[in-house]
Length: 281
Image (cartoon, rainbow, N blue to C red):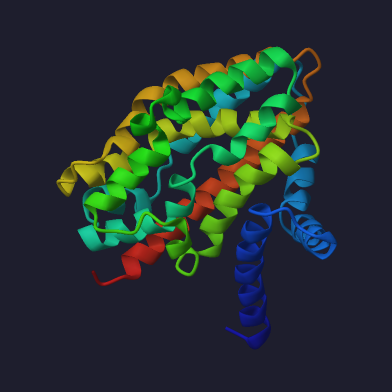
């Protein structure tokens, strides 16, 4: 790898971590300028490109049909990394993957709450019903972040998010940063509707390899994965309702959200499992 490529990769690694830090605070003027610069280099060009290339959907129903086809094509093309995780990963390798997603799992859905008041009322309430489930319906023990803590405790891993700051790869930082951007920073909340509509549906096949690995390895605290496989079919329906409830949907932006989430979630998952496969554990 030539020095220029190495330098570019190091800069990419630093910027995703820097953005994560900026999203966790109220930045000063310099920090806000840095945040804008990273977003302009990282996610905004991709959002604009996907929006420009979006199919010419005639209605929200036509877009949702397109999303269904897109999800079916993805599910039919599950990668070798997913097969490895489900069938071959050692406990140590599984822990690498769990650690890569700890920054998300330990704070799951907290960054999404700001999107609700950005949406029209009926659409926002459909999203809020999803978030209530994510947060355990007020039951601390059932919140998805607590289910992730339970998993980490069984695996003998830290439940302090700060302990994962140095080990999380840039792709998984981007995964976490994407949700914050969609909820709070994106110029339109309709990007969020497409992205989260995709995400809640894709989990139904995307988490299968995680759940199978946990069961195969004899992990008892696997509810983080099995709960998603149960509840996200309901969440998927709520997200479709949130899209249909829009009186003036921007279908290109919604579709751009679908494609953004697919790209970033897929890249993060592949990177996390690839790192685990390289670990001799």
